[in-house]
Image (tube, one colour):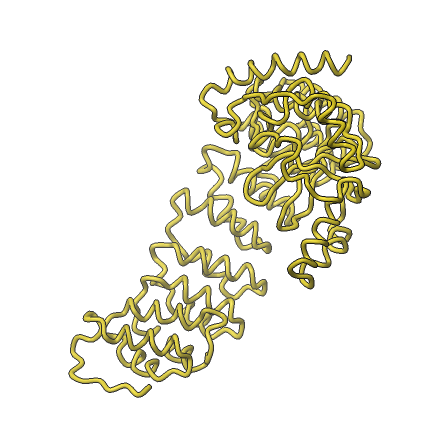
Length: 466
């Protein structure tokens, strides 16, 4: 296959994709409208290359000369050649790679907390050198084309706020671009296009079976998330993975979600099995599958309640709580039991969850224990979760917090005042004490609250010393 043949095919597919997405529902389509821009001459392309001391990858050159200088493309479209490419680092060696470890990325971005101004900009440009700006995904996310080294021609997704970059699977620009069109035409889910492998379920199933590397197998499975339906043979593969005791946990979790996505009823036995697992990762996988892929969750709520005391991970707790809330759980009792959990994040999740429950005022005593915690984040979450609860037993606790905190760096003071405002006249004594608080904003807010009719009613005369 020649580049010319691929370009002709892409030109035809642009029209097909535009017709398929007539309502411009694909992300970014309202921006680029599937339109092509005027092409560049070879003289213009070569002049750009000479100016920057580079040679553009051949598939991208063909795009500029045959398709257009920018226009329709993934996300918000493709930039014109000169846009965002005026720097002097295009010819410098590209230094990133697929599957960068967290440690490697941290070493590359160690300037983030130390450099500022021009020094930061210089370090940032150096980090992403050897790459041509291709387009934006929105917010701080950008797309680039590798210009040199082992990954020449590959597409990079990178972030202006320095989240770890991602190098897409396709070998060159035209393959990446044509895949985008194919997925629109076939009706695939195109959000975060390119973050998983391309291909239909038959291709991905073949890749999984032929691969010996667990990472490749996992990437083959994740490539199926974009599909609307799969063949019976693919469902058989997913069941095989679930049955195999030696399946990698990540592959098993992914297979479970895919089973639920494509055959909800068939996933049920494995969901129940993993919910009662002694392994916290398997329990989390089951809860995540229910949360995102099961339409009727009510058959699982009883088992989730039964397994709730065994949960030890904040993420699993949050998933379980959400599922139970959405399916009519109105009793905070099972969640209150976690107020004393040793895991701080889990305690906070429990407080947050009960804070949304209609019966939280029945557990004021439990909240009061958390208001006396040594950990400021626990105290803050407890105060915030008590919104709307005006039990008089809380007033001494709030008064003590105002005494204990001279500054508002943990936002405890401002949140306590928000709770006191809800008490009306009952809060007068505590607010009067706060009116001479050493923290200026707290003092001023207390004085302001005391002047409100709902709180000031009954006060004949108040004198405040500043």
